[in-house]
Amino acid sequence: MFGDDRLEYRVSGIVLLDTSVLIDLDVVDMGEHADAVTVVGAAPGGELAFGVGLGPDPEGRAARLRSVIERFEVLRFGVEEAKRYGAVATLVRAAGRTPRPRRPDLRIAVTAAGVRLPLPTCNPEDLVGVGRLVDVVGLSRPGR
Image 1 (cartoon, rainbow, N blue to C red):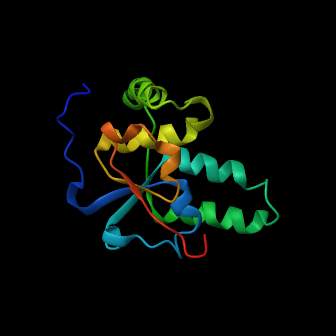
Image 2: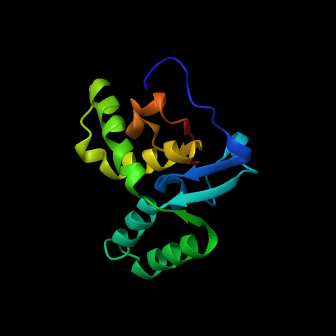
Image 3: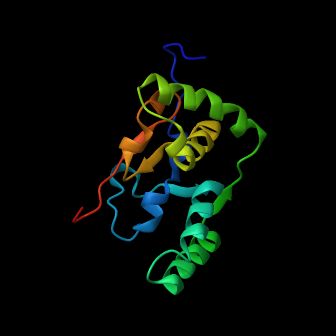
């Protein structure tokens, strides 16, 4: 399972977006993935829904959530992803990190791994250790 043979990624120019990218999609430099078809997992939708009532602009956050739901295909988090979660958490622990505070990020990672899609993120440090199962693509936001 964790041998040298990596899964083949970059399936048909499709990527699965991390929440950090969705939040600032209009300013994130997608680099080589600028023309990719983009999808999201259920976990970023959940994170955005949770955030609606937390910030100073609940109407803006609610509008972002609606936009994501309307604009992107949302991939579910199901039984296969749940099974894969244990392997990803083990990789994170082996990298000397604690999986618990990274649960939403790891749910996104296992969704990407399950469909063999690259995972563009503005926070690649949140996914240290998962590179054996997921193609984590670090992106940058201007001004950060």
